[in-house]
Image (cartoon, rainbow, N blue to C red; front, side):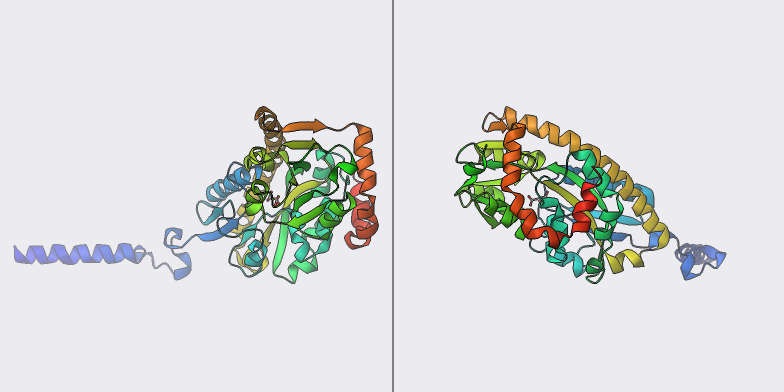
Length: 344
Ligand code: LMR
């Protein structure tokens, strides 16, 4: 009986050992079943809420990566400046503390001032014009620039948000003179500073995460943003007037840490690229839909007086903003400005 028990125990141990070593097939380490491998983690940090255009697209991207790589890569999305805010998310990407970010492109000014193309007044005619630009050769010169590469990052694709509109707390903004003496929150960079100066207004760079409080406390009188950012940040609670100005755009670049990206196994990187392509198609669609919904939400809030501009009023604001081109045309470069104009 004892002997029988001993034989059974030895048999069991042998079975367990065979199972742990991958069986008796003599597999090498390289053939280890993938379930023993840890997934590749892509930390994706961004500053908007989960219900924003960018937030929804980032979450869908994470699902698609999981599906397409069969769990071999996982995207961990950190929204709402949870991990890093405007001031440090780019540094975190450069140092590899996160692997992916999708900032509003003007925030790339720290590395390459040409990204402020997006703030050049009335440069884009409509959404289609912006989308043509996103896939153009001129756009590729920004995504793949040496300035980014020498900082260990690269741009993969553009994500869209939309046109910016002015809001403020003091009075309706209809003519250039109406901006005089007001102070606005700006995202980053000298182009936006010059934009407000040209209208006789002041500006302060305030991170996205701190803008609601700055508007509420009166640190600034107003700000400029897309309908969807205004709505998902609930600026309608702390702003009285919105002008449908479409004077500049707010769009995103999806950037990765380059050494991380290049070290990823080819097959997995290919699947992540496919996931990003699909997420990007969805993001562009969402940008249109969600901005339209957000405009309705802002109007329906009953808290904001919404003012549209006539063509003449828009032209007068455009003329007042001409000094921005005089001052920054060379920095942004004539190639980029003309390249964008030619895509109309
Ligand atoms: C802002 O700072 O207003 C935007 O860049 C936020 C965003 O990421 O859309």
